[in-house]
Image (cartoon, rainbow, N blue to C red; front, side, top):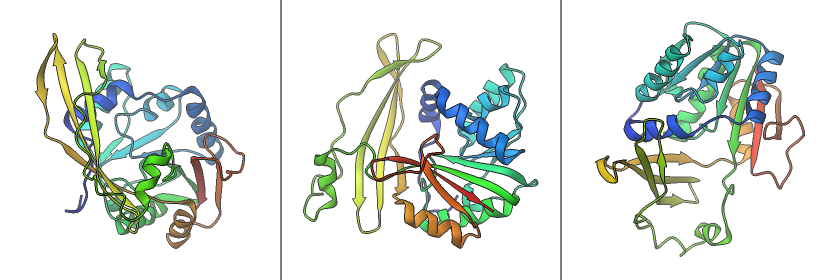
Amino acid sequence: MNAETATWHYGLIARYWNEFNVAEPAELAWYRAAIERHGQPALDAGCGTGRLLLPLLRAGLEVDGVDVSEDMLRLCAERARAEGLAPRLVAQPLHRLELDRRYRTVYLCGVFGIGGSRADDLEGLHGIHRALAPGGALMIEHELPYAGLDEERWARWLPGRRGDLPRPWPAAAERRRAADGDELELISRLAEFDPLALRHELELRVRLWRDGAVVEEEAPRRLVENLYFVPEIELMLRTAGFTEVEVTRRWSDEPAGPDDAGVMLVAIA
């Protein structure tokens, strides 16, 4: 990871992600069908703790995983061993991929643009293109910059409307109970937003509760995210060597439209 990379996939945040983020049935069905269509082996690029990887392995598909976070990969490996699974897991940032096999399918689920610079993101696409067999497919699941925004938060795109940044920390957030009875409280705030650079930075921290008391609280971690609209991603894909690029609605083969806040981009190497 280069010095500019800033992400949050470590420590208690990795545990929070592992405990509470699960794949939806429609999501799994789409990815399974796409991998069966484009071919195996497949690579989950930014696999995290195995939210998609492990269910796809259970379904009998050949899927490897790569992620920048050794904490997340450790949790993924622990869950896999408990189920008798043995995925190939590699700890690498996506902009420095050096993999020892080629893939028919690679997918990026909600991770494109996280953690580095735009140059890193483009280099990541080049690396994925090199990792794909000729004719292989890259699938990017991507939320557009306006996803989940209301009028008040959209106003921060206007000059003079960002004077409240960084936002104050909320006093508290929802506490969620983990499988072992511990409670995890994820607190976040918007720290910076640059509409010219299409980039924002969030700060996140987690409190660990046990028997009604905080027993651990990590220092805030910073998440840098580059914000992308579809045309820029399409241009980057073609620059990285991909040919056909199709944009559909999330978990669908129907063309995306202006009211879609999340899309799938499928590009052929």
